[in-house]
Image (cartoon, rainbow, N blue to C red; front, side, top):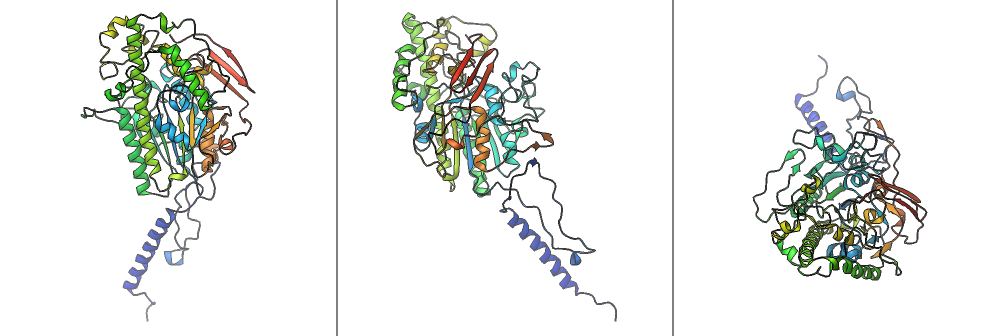
Length: 546
């Protein structure tokens, strides 16, 4: 007889079974856990660990690479960063109504000694990288980059982002809203895209690549593609960003419910242009006729009742270059009060829209295992509107200033789509109650101290607690990594990483009396600078922004 041969049908069946087994192993791999997070990313390419014979019959069974997952129990992470909002701006810390932040704080923690860098791009670079903003290449905003080390406007590869680390450890990542960390000369539709959000570790991006944009007719991109202008007559960017944040989060959980997400939401509010739906502005009609001096007195008392400032706290004095409210003419008072009504409506509206995102998180099956970090401002409130406010902020950046008569002629249209308006610097100073100065002033807390609320129902026991440890925006990255059980790599994408300078805040979550772990911090922005050490502050101020 000739050599024994298998029946052709049996051979086909064996091949089919082998393929089915392979598919089953791939499916099972989807839910496999990664035993640890490596110090070098990316992980090495998969190689079959068994023996390979002449055919599959005399080879070890096939195996496939396991889909990367974070450590067991890693939480979803929702990070919200508002824009140009001062310490005393929202009701959670004594200001205008913010019921959704209030609700989040009632079930989580308020931090009243948290700090930023006093300007947009630097704060955001420090947040993403956990390094000082100079180390992260953003000593100033990208539009003012000088080319010198620390001021290039480019986040270096040696300062990898928290999103890139989380993505390579199994997280789904998305950035919704403002991206002010792409060099200005790379923000067009042709890129290059290395420094866009997708190049900084985010699977998905929907937002704008600039310091600000119109809230009614914004320049928006989805990943690398320009989004057409909306035909909706009631369109507002804050609403659209909330819609996309919710849709992405729900889609991610519907497709792969066991995969945690990192969602970074950075709306344009309350940065100029101050634009809000008319019905939100009208809610505040007449509520600021008392003026900025009285506003600060009222809100300091609210802050004391809330416990976010000490009972014996006193107001810092009004800078000599800012006029007293009572020194103004009736026309000035009417215009400036209206500008503040617009700003308050803008703030109340973004509170509502971010509240929708938070409510969507609460509806998730794993809602309790979601770490929500809500930072109320990337710096103090903005005084870039000058002493009289503006109908077009861009004009002042070009040295053009208008008399208030021009603004009065269009007072009823401010806050709408026709004007790029900004309120007076005096209101910015009031929004930073009780501290001195404003955005751009890194030497004083009016520019750098921002409220923060943190919630994590599965891990934080206290509800409505207050935390007063001294912390900084660089501390966000290590906090997220520790909460997720992920170590920062020594090497990321082939580049040795600079040390992370942030200090995780997890130690404070369940210990209100835990001693500060951050003992010192430097602040610097265009020669306004300060140094904090062990409860003391040394400040040196070079200029004011008006």
